[in-house]
Image (cartoon, rainbow, N blue to C red; front, side):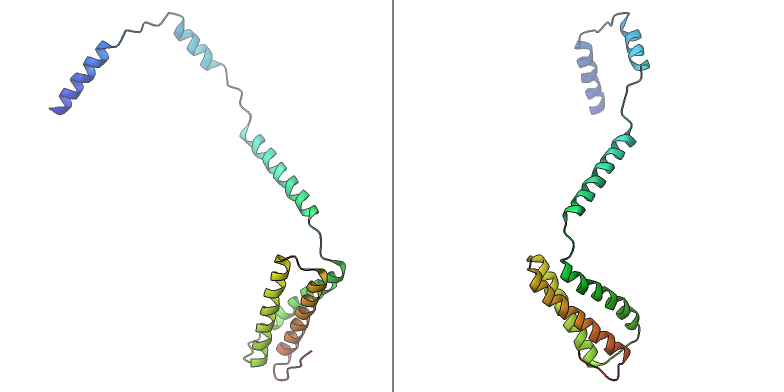
Length: 153
């Protein structure tokens, strides 16, 4: 019953609207407007342009970032070499307390090194930390290789 009342009100409101009589030329103009294609730039061209700009920007930023200080580069290279050897040596399970202690010391040095970089430490401060890190890595390598006899460097 409520639906019928609402429908009657809608019909009454529509009947009160002014009548629209389009001109005879309106429909052909609509058809003609739809027939001409709208020129749009291809989405892939916009995406490719944005990707190229992002790549160029990242290359520019990468070139602006300085590499490691020359005297630190030797420590970094030595640490990377020791890390590779240590990764292979860590495959052996060692329950030696000295090895575990060296692992903790290495973790402490790593945290200190990251903190130094975050605080923009001087090259002298960084060199001390890198030297300490390479010493811990070398000691760990010896400890893993010779689990029975630990040699501190």
